[in-house]
Image: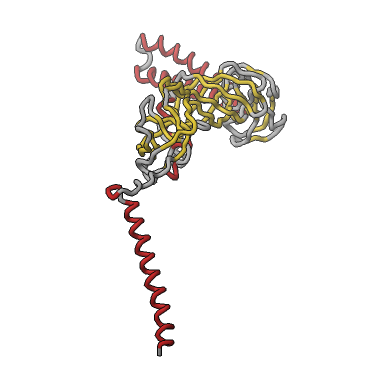
Length: 360
């Protein structure tokens, strides 16, 4: 019996000793955590090491590059007004012609014969009218007969004008000074009003068409100077804005702009692709910050500002974006300091340790 008791008492003593030890350890921890009871104060959270940026005003030139196309200042597809047979051609391909130059003549012998007939009838009627003018003075004929003869005379003159118009329709004249393109007809060809004879383009000036995003539409004004280059030529050319469309394109939300190139070069050809450079505005007091400092949200943007060594989140509004910086239009002032690294791991009020300090 004594032997069994000894085996039972040993485990009970071990359990009691363990329980007492654990209780003593917890008591020591409580004493250590309580400064009032003479323990050590709790450890402060470590400082977060970040890079900061000092906001300073700088000069900002809002430059934009868009695509455009060169067009002839004046360009017309040459077509005849009436059907007929070509009897004369004066289409010097690649050569200049003056306004009013006869380019193509159609067969008009029948119309010329009709004109001569009317002219003869007019001459006869004029003589009759002259004789009746003398007779009406002596009451040789009635006033009514005299007026009827005058009416026939005027009718013949009108018919002659109509005939001359029909004859002019058999001629294709140069509508302006320009250069003739490649001709598509030969002598003897039967042509209709839909037949393309050739093209004529003005050679002294060119037009440049391009589009800008809707938000820049108010920056484009007539008389504004722009520069452009060609894909096969790095030389910069100058153009002057003529005007804009009076409306935004619904599909692209762009505004169409047209400029004129006064000093035409042999390298500038209608239809060529152009890179257009726009200098929209300048701001000498722009607040530019690194783009990585921006924290995007669903409906807003913010940055982390440093105040008394702690992090504070500030909502901002942005403007022009460049390669590595972005303009702040609202939310910051010159001299403010913002965090540029580690922003995803910071919370409001976090204490900061500066690694590097940069400015614009």
